[in-house]
Length: 175
Image (tube, rainbow, N blue to C red):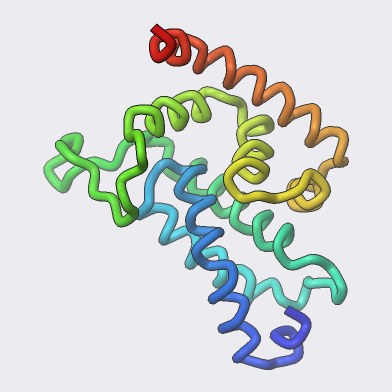
């Protein structure tokens, strides 16, 4: 990142190669839409280019980049309150087009996504970053502008709520 800030265009290419897919995956889980995630990932990297003057040398890039991505998703959600993408005729699509391989258990994946969507953003973001992005609590705290203990509390509460929301599914599969 420091090389990019100094004008090295190849350094941006390296940053994009390293972080584009993980950021896009995070945004897909956050928004529930691979197409929206792709747009937001591009917007995230455009914002990174525009904000490079505010990057502080020595700071970790990953939390900073995820903060930009999270803010892009929040802005998008504020502008687009509509939960489903409609066809040009204004109807719900019959099938969702996925550019990622089908998950091992599509029903379970949908149940987890629905449960995650029910969590408040303050609990959902730490879980997405921790569980799905593999970020540590210190990185998440840096990314969200919170203390590490606040992130741990939010994640703990979120995981507890997820267990409650997914309990009927667990009971159903244990029969």
